Length: 275
Image (cartoon, rainbow, N blue to C red; front, side, top):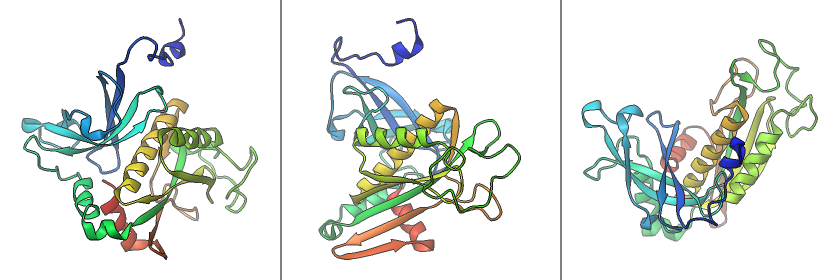
């Protein structure tokens, strides 16, 4: 048990009923994710049974220094693929101590809309195609690209195989399996047009659960790339010039009608869906 990996992978279930809950929220930029962990006395499956928690909002760009306390409200629970066992990941949104949603809490307004009986009756399905780029950590240049240089033109990389065309598959597959373990309705992955760029799909999921699942999938991907020493970027245009960008195509279905939403309407839907 001298190796750090042995301690990280300790199975606590044989020694205690206590679990670790990782509380996760969206930071002040609207894209950065933050998290911290706490010990609970036993397994929990209902987010309403979880305690609220707090954090220093002045350190995340979400509150002034003279009044920095922000309260986390647990909203959704997922299994923790890193600690495993009964440990959990908890998607939260953020409020003032008086119970008002802070300005960066987009989930609150979305929840009000999706809980409207008329909206519930429509059973709105969403499928979100999240593209991203894997970057070499020290140079912020796509994985598999020569440092300071460029690979061959786009064409052979989309859904490709081979060491000269596909870069980062171990990270992608680890993320895929970790999302399935967590209970995310991840429906697939593929290599994208630009080398070092990938996509995962979440859905079909109903209402606000689609957003919760995308955010937790992003969180898990950030954690896996942290372990791998690689940077993940959701920048829509990470490399200028004739190289594909990265987006999050949103597919919507009500009844028999299916729509792929792009452009300004997509931005509105994602603002509504994603906290």
